[in-house]
Every structure is written in structure tokens, then in C-alpha cells.
Image (cartoon, rainbow, N blue to C red; front, side, top):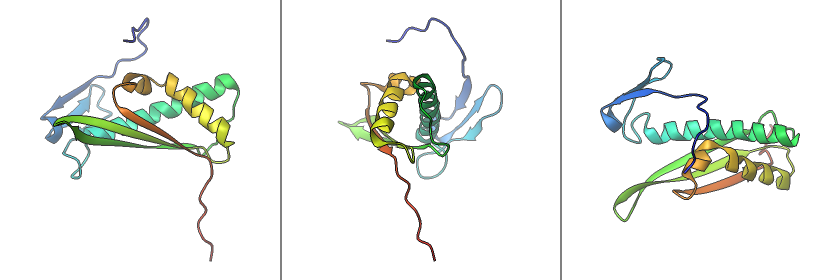
Amino acid sequence: MTQLDKILYTAKAHTTGGRDGASRTDDGRLDVKLSSPGTGTNPEQLFAAGWSACFLSAMKVVAGKKKIALPADGAIDAEVDLGLSHADYGLRARLNVSLPGMEPAAAQALVEAAHQVCPYSRATRGNIEVALNVITSQVTGATH
């Protein structure tokens, strides 16, 4: 278990009604009506958004320490699955990391290092299945 030596920030949210309720942060910047998957915003979407944002920031930290330039159009598409395992609910995730123009081995090493640094990755390590998919080339559209 990770023990914190210093608290940098505390997020506070008040939630009522569970999956079919609402959640609001204490500063009012996030105020969302929640619903079951497929009908509106749900906890898995919020988790995917938070993890992908945090992971991208972790990549920036690692890149800065290693003096590696990140592509300006780098992005993460996070996918979080809600499912059942022996009648218990569980999660599985994929982080599809797009680093166009980066050399594949360097991009893979950067993503793996960020996975060691990112607090969301650290919190889920050993608890859920996580796939890291690195994409270094851009798909170009057809021209007419």
C-alpha cells in the first residue's frame, strides 16, 4: 500500500443515488447527472477520463526527466470495461496511447515508464487487467 508523505490536493465530490443519481464537486466545477452505461454519463466514463488525463501528465513528467520531446498531438483513448467475474462486478482497462512520429521502441519505453509513475496506474496495478497499446503512426485519410 502506498503511504503518502505529503498531500498535494484533495478532490471532494458529493454523490447521491448511485449510478442513477448525481455527483457534484465541492467547487461546483463538475456537476453531473449519472446513469447506467448506455444512457448517459457513468462512473466508468469518469474513471476513463481521469486516468487518461493523469497518464498523459505522467508521460509529460517522464519525458521531461528523460529530455524526450513528446508529439504535440499525443493523446490517450482510455477504454474501461465493466463486467462480471464469477458473479462479482469488476473492471478491465485499455490505454491506447497515440504518439505519432515517435520511434516505436522509445514510445513503448516512455509509456511503460509513465505506467510506473501515474497514480491511477499504481492504484490499479495488480487489481485489474490493464493493456497498454502504443500507436506511433498516424492513419491518413484518402484525398480526392
